[in-house]
Image 1: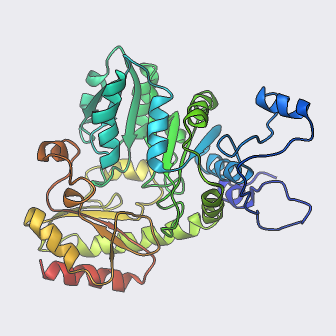
Image 2 (image 1 turned 120 degrees about the vertical axis):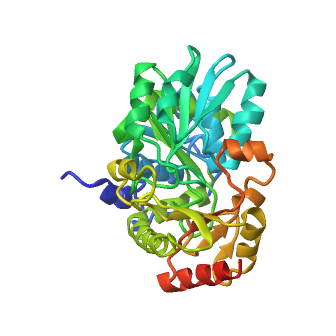
Length: 389
């Protein structure tokens, strides 16, 4: 019987033990035993898929990977300790001295640091293209461009990039297309369906959904994933068995949660769109969004993030956060509890003004991660904080 990926994500489990459990147990162990020397030799020779060491593989981690592979429509996957280790692993396993990485300019602050501060130390050239100017992308491709990296929607500016367009460029020039799908999740957008070769997530965000654990995952073409797996196996950013168990269980409710997050977020975005204290507001499924048509083509909903620019800039951004009464002020997103952040003074605060402009971080930018509280309570807290700005 053919099953929907959502059903597979719920029903995919490790092999049931002799205890006949219904829910997958946690495999809290650093290593795994063998009945004899020959079995151990064969495992180390990659002649079998037997578990050896939890840095290499673990049944619970494998279950989480298998679920993400089903949801994203991928061939294979690898899990990592954090979202940033997934980003770094996907770069370092596939790029070498002399290669060029082309990235959209709207990226998370830590990703920006990797691209600008660390990859050049390994002889990897890096450059940005404007997420809002696709006509400039092909001209930025060099003979040594090995990978195109992008976020869509971008963090935190919610620019939406045409995956089909970029995938066609990548195919034309034989370049790996690597997509951070964290904001959309596979329940809203599947980049592989549009031609991406790799998709990665900070599983810490919507996939966990309750702000409990850290985790990352990369899925995509089997040949690329194998190289990333070997890099991670040897360098050690392994996902813990406990975190894998939490994330695997979380995937079973992802569909229900994201539907509610998106519905509430759309309502809040609509209510705030013309507020007098706001210069502009972005939400992918509002018709006012510059890439509304692209969002409707490749996304099933607009996701759980809305962002807006406060009139008055940096100080007004701080004032807004200080006057919130319900929303959490924390360095995270994708939680059951709504979260507000001011990137210019927090996640991107260590960047120079020039660097912030390079990644589209404006002084008064506010990012709201809409949780599962009653929508009226979320909106009322935002409104009362705006009135005090």
